Length: 391
Image 1 (cartoon, rainbow, N blue to C red):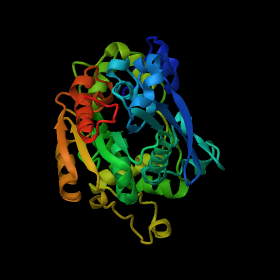
Image 2: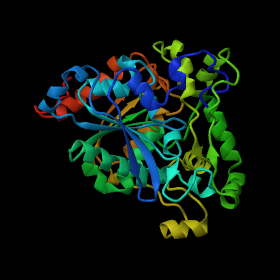
Image 3: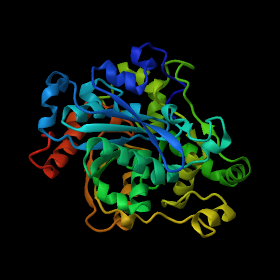
Image 4: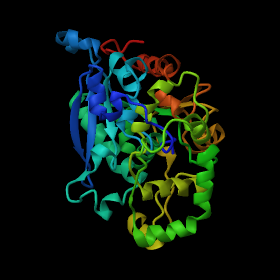
């Protein structure tokens, strides 16, 4: 999807590092935690408890409170999405240096979250999951773990792309978690997935045309692992063109010298049902639970059709960070969906970051000044004097 077929031959040591290794490579503290969901998936949750500078000030770390913040990545990515650049332009490390206790979730199906209490990752049953399951099980389990480790009663939440789907779905499906999320920041918010443009829009249009065939596949063959992690296949020659066609032209601050690192950390596995749910929502121009089959829907939902998510149950402050240059998250669709489906007062601000494409929200070298400073400023206004976070 993100020009993996055309890019990535240049060498960079971070190409071969895990997310944990990338964090440690820049001399940040890092903890690995396992999180077991209610349905048995064992997820990887990484923690950056404080910033790099604080290593030398470890004796003073308890003098103020570091508010916890959880970051959820997008589709075909993992937690590495938030640490792909050097510290000054990686959201995860920027937040750690700003005084946060940072948690990075790897949702089910990613490299470090292909474990289960009963199933193996080569079992077909393992891959029978969608965003519904990430929203119902993964995100809540990660929130509970982060709060347990930090000691706070609520945290801040950042989602990128599909991570915004998962975050919204969770707050609607399990409204008790609204009390555990102080504010939700949505980077490149997904809306419904309807109206996407560019090369990806062409792919979605094709998928929608063969939806009857895909429904047969879904019913009779189940779900399967779907990944495109082959950054070494061809080379860099067509990279810029393919990137622009797929997700829109990158911002001028996009660091092409880091491209090998980027391509080495995309194309991460998802389930085929996960992708199909996105297509179903795009077709209906709404946000529904996964439509399996009338009989299975009756077992899951108590009705023959898949029910819509009730976004009016979202009851925490929501901030959208978007760009009209983002061909995967058309602003008109985002605005209409949130305006018509959320309760009055929940959406606090829709902040445009001009020039950014879909991936610039986690990759642009100037995101600290143009985006993260805004998020940190908003959070600072919500925190009291005991907080380590200062704008």
